[in-house]
Length: 442
Image 1: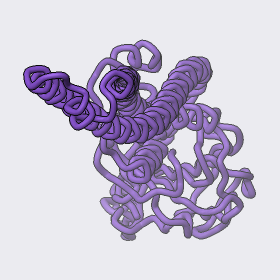
Image 2: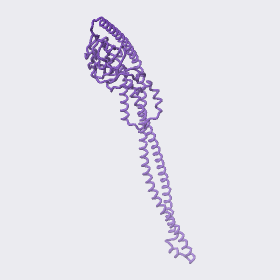
Image 3: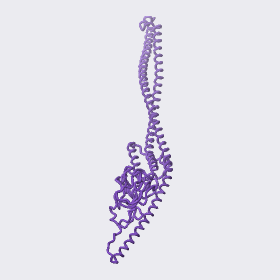
Image 4: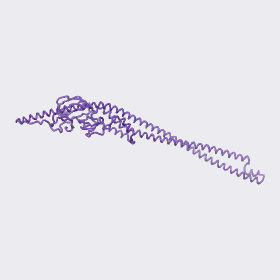
């Protein structure tokens, strides 16, 4: 009994026991501290998760559809958490890097503003010095003009004796030297002033650029922090959803276990019934054989029917035209967490597809089989010395309820009743009341 739309498998599917604990919220708290990959491709991650969910659905034998859907949703959420956590870590790393870049940009802006301020202060001081020097030169020139006339010639002509003439000439030379030095200093200071003005202009341009860079860095940092906040919210949402889903699975699991108990009880009852019928058939066959031997011994002739039938190999016909979606065998159930027998062979076909008797026989049971859903049980009598019976389960509806049936006769239609996850026929074969692989008889 399993999902009809997957490829058949004969090996126990252990890898699908992913949910070793249904209360995953506690596990999330533990795994959140673990390192996660940071370069994963979201598209590939989604395909991986979808594949895991598909494989999981493939293994949900003897499970109700609502529990299977709830568990698949839980697994999908759990599988999405590592990628979400990785995205959050990447977003946080990007936010931290953006914050560091923003801090550097702010420091560079502060340095540029400080340099500009220093240059402005120096420009003010230099401008004041140039103005002061210019004023001194002007005052000095006015004083010379007022006191000494127009130069050396005037001073010489107004001298009263040679000594006074020489003294005045020396004084004029000294004054002219001082004046020349003052003019040179003024020229130098003016050149320095021009250089400072050019430097200040460059600093202002640099400050403006640094300001733009700081603003851009701040915007990037804010965007990165918003992305990290969003990623954290997404992860928190997944965690909350996982916790809620785990509770839902627990509640559905309790109900489903009751169904499973009824299914196992029905299996046990059917085995006993068929074992008793097989024993009775063998007893009758033995009595018949004894009578025939006695008759031959008395000279009556005749031959024994052998009780039975052709060899078991190929005795049963295919009961459905659907593809085989799951084989007979032991497997680990991912929800119930124990090994159990998948007691038949599943044929996947659309609901309503005809189901046919695999061989002639007598219907000994038809109706509601609990976890089996709508079911028909056919006793084929002794075949090769074995009491052979077949069951047809999860039928959408039953067409033949009792009496004799012939090989290939329609007994019902494929469905998904009972503990089933999709439209399919769960076909079982029993020898003397014990489940055997249907392939032995097909």
